[in-house]
Image (cartoon, rainbow, N blue to C red; front, side, top):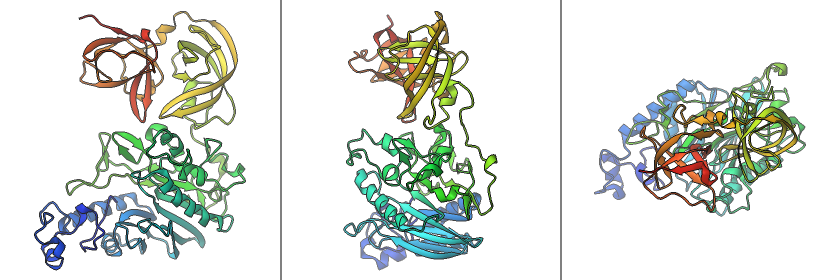
Length: 506
């Protein structure tokens, strides 16, 4: 909701949401003669605008059950509900000392609610709301979360995960439920926070991945094999979308997935309530998301800094033969590797050409197909030769797909014209992610403070390998063989060796 506050002053409001109407300033000495008494502060007009915008979005979503985060009070929930009369049932939960709480709106009857406390010594910790609804005589539990933000380290979010896990352990086997809300954690948090000293104070352990078991042995749980685990594991619905579409929030232009839906095995057993495979999506009409920007609440207009996520469930029996997992590799093409999370069985890739190599690393490519980066496993390959090989392990390193283990290498022939498989930087859109891991050539620009400034008024980050002597600022350089990479959703060019660039004479 990005902070839906009422007009009553409680003393727990964020600074910009303290009410400032004349009526309230007369009754609240805090507000008298305050800089908050102006048209820019939180008042009836701004509240009305925000409620109207949010209610319009919820109407367009047309979901049966809505879970809300960042909402201040029962009173403001009631104001929102007036605009949404088709949601007959609602419930709100908040820690008395917290600024915001969570709520659920439902077209189905709410038959039970429960507050799950987080930490009795932390008076600001937001409890998790458990709401049980009755659907076609079946019970469905929604656990609505709003975990601690990343202003704090991971151990604070781990407490929420532990509280949730303790609740789930005591739950009857086969219970249908969904864990959802703002976890302030990416679906692959154990990878994205790993090298952040501010966040990683848990020796690499994350609440969302390790405690709630969305990964096992450093591999994300997939819906295709979730029933094979004896442990209580969860499938994160972000895995149903292509990697470039996984975001509900942007931080400094980078894709983030703080909002999550985690499903247990019970929703895949075809009993009672079932998840409808591939129904998960991010709701982003033009009024919420346009020109790669989220239309957040700002200067008394807009919506929220988060995009809604939505998924569908059914009480009907599912024909499992009609619900194949999306993006399962069907052929021995490199491009298929980009559509899977991890390799459960080795994949044979045929007719690859080594087009670039340095030390034990290489870039391989198929004719008229994609390229991929072999990290620290290419010592037995030679540049300019064609092979068949087997890929055993792939990893996603801050958005860049890498192969980390290969086997069954079969050399086939020479391919001396391997540079013909480079991408001409003047003929392609180097920012298009379909060229990730390609080798780009023929790019000329001015280098300054880590960026290459191109003639089309664009710039691209250059990342130089360790011990590489970077060019001086304000010199013109030519990219002879740059490795197109991506780091936290931003495209960059990786420079691995001296011959990759050439300083141009004036």
